[in-house]
Image (cartoon, rainbow, N blue to C red; front, side):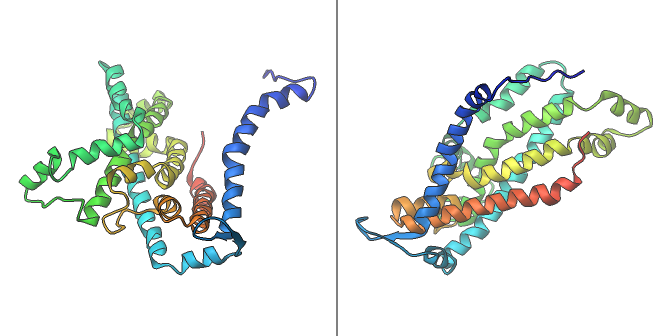
Length: 294
């Protein structure tokens, strides 16, 4: 019989919930409200006067080709980061689940990148691919590849995708490994007795049972690509060359901090928040239908 904790009054539950509610209000609802208010106003060049402009900031954004182009770059960037972070994470987890000797050391090494901040991860990969002193850039030139991400927008996008995905592989590895260890061994053994090979067992039994974990990580990785990759882009390319890596979250910062367009930047942040919420809702509405729990 399941035992449940029952509080005699409302005061104790309220006190226990107060810290979390305070954090949510201060760090989410209050900034979100401020962004919505600022998105509806416009300041003069010196920030001395403010006037209400309604939806003019939003209309100006959707009439700006540069802003519309950033949507395409963000979609490409987020999909590439999610795929490149999820696939190796699953592969490494499957390999770690089969290792008996040295498993602890193997897992520890794979978890180290998660402890590195996105900005530091970007700097590490920037040095590796630096056209002048980078070891990997030198190897690429030896293979006949003219590598210079400072001038080539496609190479710059590839570099920030690799850096951002590398940072997230450890997170995915940890959850995939926990999911693999939760798969009943009896099911795998029964399939092996029936003659199913390793690939068939993984495709038909193990991977479907990982559906809840995979769905959770898909949502987390897309949100990560939209928001937490700012440090990678800022330290590696600063949105260049020629805006080739300027995704939505970086454009919000650049227009607000560098361009001092607070109204336009706030409108961009509201749109970005709405896009992420919509994508998450779509994933829960349609993709979760294919997920089977238990």
